[in-house]
Length: 82
Image (cartoon, rainbow, N blue to C red; front, top):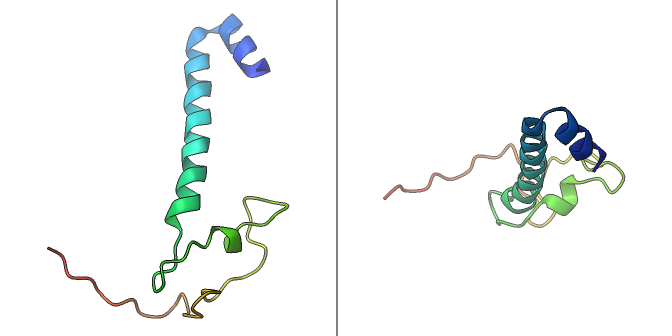
């Protein structure tokens, strides 16, 4: 709120930049929640890769899917394109 108050008093275009930054942060959080999946079983890995204390760091090194135990370095079968 303080940013928007200061931005509106200095230059109204800074409010637009602040809104774009907030929307960008929200959309990347949503993308991270839904898009990071295991290539083999398709399970969401968000709970595994997110630390409860630091949302920008993984709690530990993750080398395989905790649901199907497939290594992330394994070959993924190719899909046929239509």
